[in-house]
Image: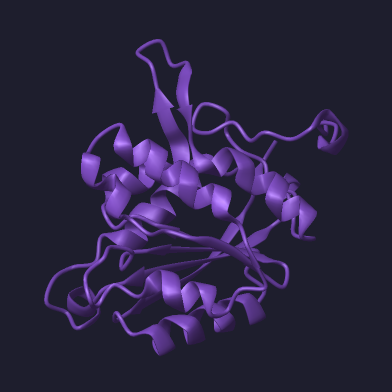
Length: 199
């Protein structure tokens, strides 16, 4: 089936960085998010990118703007460590209607497979209206590992990535039906929630 056969989705992608937003260096977060989502989803995607500094009020305002613009999913990258300027989790929680702690717990579990300092990451996920907002790590490699999970040499999943749960979460909050390319990330839904494949 062509992309046109699947429900369109609008996705907000937000890179939070003082230096990248001021042009000191090139932002790598937005291209990494867009690349992974384009590979993972069968749905046609309209991206809403934002590159903003580490300022809580600016981050919160961007998240509200993206939700109000109809983004069913908003992914942020950067600003989740313990440094004084790392305020993305606080800015995200400030706009939340519901917190989804399982996402942060799983992201840290994935990170701990690589570095002990993964426990310093403070990523959160929340629901605002009919949108799921998730904070991701700042490094492109870590973004893919977190979303996709870890696979053995034979391709079998050893640690589930967080994105496997995203489509069903978006179903539950009233968003579009997201369908994934299984070779990148197989979405999980209860049998009662799976729509029959169209011819």
